[in-house]
Length: 536
Image (spheres, rainbow, N blue to C red):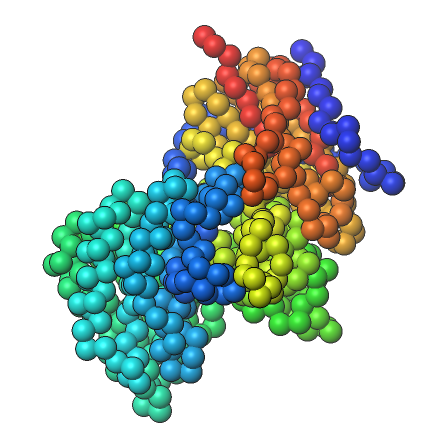
């Protein structure tokens, strides 16, 4: 029987010139296999501890407060379920001696968790570990315990876990013979970051024990390690594994360990990479497929190094899976600080959607894109940046938010295996998530004119067990297929605003025929396809 052919294009979209003939792609979903249940709080953001303080980063008063209705509306419209509060400022970074950022007060914490309650989210809350010699606090562990007790007694339903410190594996965190930072954390082999792990873990364990004694029910996550040349990304000399893995092994089986936390900026610092080069890098298939550290063209003939997802997974996180240890990316972005007109443009929406699905397919428990005020990698920004004298306001989203919302829509259930037949080898990825009743297939066409490979994909989805299922879909687009340089995005025909609920609509596409459906996924767009099994 002939497969039903459905046209999948928005009537409002026009092109000045036709793209090349469509490339045939078949996405076959093994609906009989359920690989990993995607947690309901997978979609998250990360914020600096300094963001909790009043009058920080150009904000007048509190950023996190139940009175910030714009921010609450944005969180709900994006589908954010969790935030991590930490970053470099949890340990006081911001001055030469890392002593400048104050520790949040009870009032600051009240505002944060009242916001969490209003927004319907949970919080990974970080407390300070680095006890800098120049401003040492001999009672820091006890002070941390008091903060955790305060939060636990008042806001337990909104706590995911507690973390202690931030990126302790980076070399600048460690004392060396020529430079003392925190005497408790030191490199036994100067210049070798991994050699500081034993002293770090002894110090972390001391803090955790003091806190756990005061709050027996508290659960911890960590170590919030980095992926960089100055970190423990390479195996530690003393253990032969990453800090993340060793930390999980050292805490495995203890009642207080919740999940492992990792950071990932795919290509680190972008230097002078241009927007066009950054877009090409973000949408490159090498990020999904590479198994070794790679290099891509950057500004003025230079090269930008990047860490492909399979490489990071194999080196840092895969050993956690057989251990049964959940892991989360609590800081993630395409690069540190970002590239204007790329990291904050439409390409970031496609990148974020692909990134989240790739990691969900590899057992990740969630991703928190870091929102460090106010730089191009941010998801939520004030309308005017820098903020005017009257203070930040009229908060809005960058296109990345639409990629996050697209993931939230298409991630209900378990990851199911996907086989992609792609004879022309176009730059396209596909993912499937489903239950016995609903199947979500996300197809991301990353071809675009800057990389000279723009082509529409003629996609056939083959999903056994969903014969005659009702099909609907949403398109993630910037309104101009093939053009990855635009700064706008819509999903299901709607943008995300700070004033009203997101109004994207599923577009009915009829029914499956012989377990198959055909549709066109335009260049530089993504389709989230929902297949609903018929009632039996």
